[in-house]
Image (cartoon, rainbow, N blue to C red; front, side, top):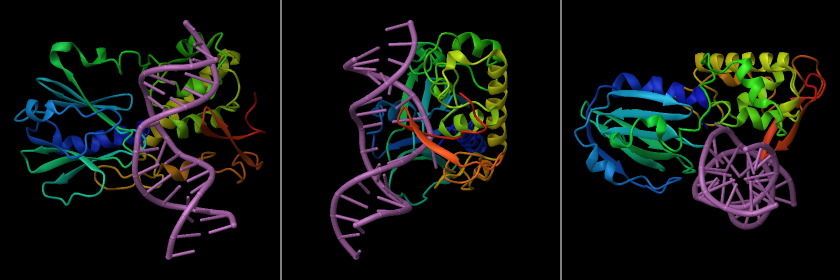
Length: 275
DNA sequence: TTTATAACCTGAACGC
DNA sequence: TGCGTTCAGGTTATAA
């Protein structure tokens, strides 16, 4: 479900009721997520205050004086802020109960998500194994055409895989990778190392624009994405190619095609996007 | 070192 | 209705 805009929407949604609030208790109903949820957080974080709710890539970071709780929503996760006592539903795996009467609730049917702990004694959270190798944030100045061009040289993987590689840049998931490539007129199977400087510039700009626009719209609603307030995102109405195989290209009218790359669906217009 | 593949798990949608 | 198949928004560990 969540790509970066959805994670950012989630962050913004839970902040008003969760930041600067004190944890009353943590309930782990099913700790068998992608990695086991460390049971010690229940005792460790009792009576601790959430100083800040940040984000790095698709990881939500709940910072406390004792360390940071890393939450990843995987493919099907969703984090909502609810009044305490809200009925527990299927796949509600973890509750962070706050003293202000709200609860941060993690629901994740496929359990590809994760809840991990980085202790303050282990240094800054950016040193965490899962964060240390991540590429720059897509909307930062650090992610620019020079950086992208240099890293892509000699690379033989497809540009689609390259864009989706979180070591290159975080946050460009399947939907937004497809959309950015379409807007840039670049075929998803083109080899990363074959892009010209100009194409890198166009692509970088489009990745930034697509993600910024999606955040603005509150994320993409596919199936069941809801922001923490329960509102759906509206970006799906703006998709040009994703999920539109068989339909006509909004630019030229040719038929949108669907192929599988790295076990993920790619959508493109053969006429508008060149190898 | 780089790239490709398998794996984690559930549920919705579809065809028969 | 029911059963089997296919597909899904992510990312890591391991193999090649």
